[in-house]
Amino acid sequence: MEKNLSKLFSTSLPGDDLVAFVSVFFSLGFAANFFFSFTNKNIYISNTIFLVGILGYLLIAYKWCSNLPEFFKNNVLIFYNYVILSILFCFLSYFFPLLFLISGSLVISLIIAIDKKIHQSNIFLKIMFILLTLTFYLLELAPDVNFRLRNLKEEL
Image: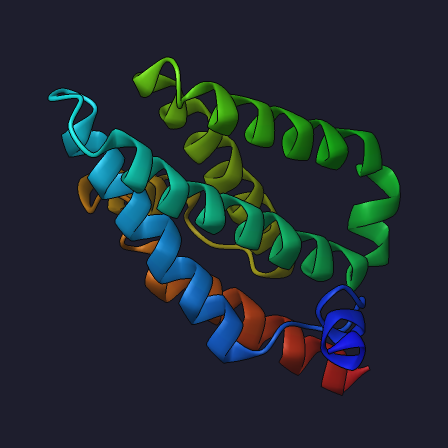
């Protein structure tokens, strides 16, 4: 078990299965929080699923940033502020249900910033996809970022 934990918290790129697993948790938790926050039913269950997704994405984003040293070196304080605020607003959303939108948008913007650093693309189009699909577009975007980072690391 110690070997698996050391691999999970290492700076190596995450596996595709971990990225897909976290993407599913984040997207399902976000959508469930969105619908249940207006009825106040099952909000604790959906918030817990969302919390697992947030923590997983923050771990994956840390692994991605550690493989982009120029990005992480210049933006280390901003990255840690994203992490602290995402976790804080995620825990506060247990008491104030609509605060999960802030933590979700912080994690989404962090993923888009990492994607922009790797590949120049149309950010406005990606933001529109994310808004229209209630973050289910991240099921496609996060594994794509992981794949491009793996290819970039292999080229070096």
